[in-house]
Image (cartoon, rainbow, N blue to C red; front, top):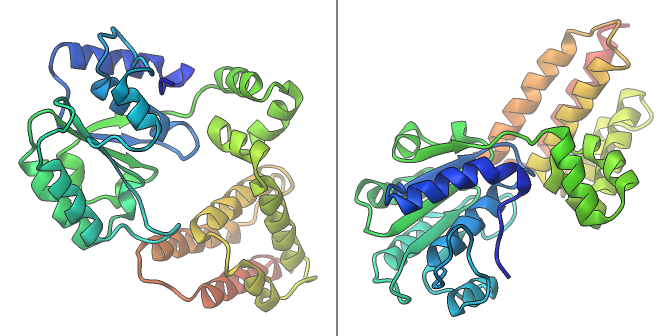
Amino acid sequence: MSALPLPWQESVWSSLNSAIDADRLPHALLISGDSGIGKSRLANALAQRLTCSAEMVKYACGTCKSCLLLAAGNHPDVSFLEPEDSGKPIKIDQVRALCQSLSKTAQQGGWKVAIISPAEAMNINAANALLKNLEEPQAKTLLILVSHRPSRLSATIRSRCQKLSLPTPDSISALSWLTEVTGDRGAAEQVLPLAGGRPLLALDYCHSDNLQQRNDFERLVSEVREGLVSPLAAAQQCQKLDGDQTIDWFSRYIHRLATTELADRPNTALFDFSDSLLRARNWILSGNNPNPQLLWEELFMDWVMVFNARK
């Protein structure tokens, strides 16, 4: 089966195909944008398009040996690099192994492609190890860095990649696609706004318990705000959750609160708390292994103070 770009990526896909046809494809691409909009889908489609052995004009065939190997996750010339555990950094040994693989001749005689996602998960040593490949690219080798937060990548890494920033699709395109995939327009209309208009995140909400987890977390946040649950007890419930994802939920909860319930009586302390969330996220993503219990205790105590200051 061919990995196809998503409908709202057609203009970007057309530009990539033009670059391939003109032999102007860069040695490194930085595909950035919000999570849940299809960046990895585009990267996978491009990897399959480059390694497909059939004479296709625009898309990979999906049926040749190369396409079947990629679909099975066994293509010798396509590498995927991601954290070994969710929320953990990509380590230098992983990058070194990738670079060693890229230095070898393509087994299928064509392109070699490596997809690093999320690229900002590389720790400092791992990012430095990747620089040699970016500075001395091999022929017919493409590095694709997929990033939710490109600002967390070093300026040196960013400067050596061609940047491809993907916007969140418009609501009509996102709803149309989600309805087609789920076969349930009502559910699509309900879940898409909760996902911030991000269709792949909305699809994940439809097919997993992530939406229930998010609802449970928002209920907990409200209970702490109302004094029904202590910051300590709330922190105990959150310490095993994905910190980055949960802080994203918290940030979106605050935005919704500020634009609905508190729209007529703004609370400036919310802005300070949003800064605290940002610092906590940066600390989580830094790879310094913060104590999650202490981190959430501090956040929830600050959250209580946001509303106590108004009394």
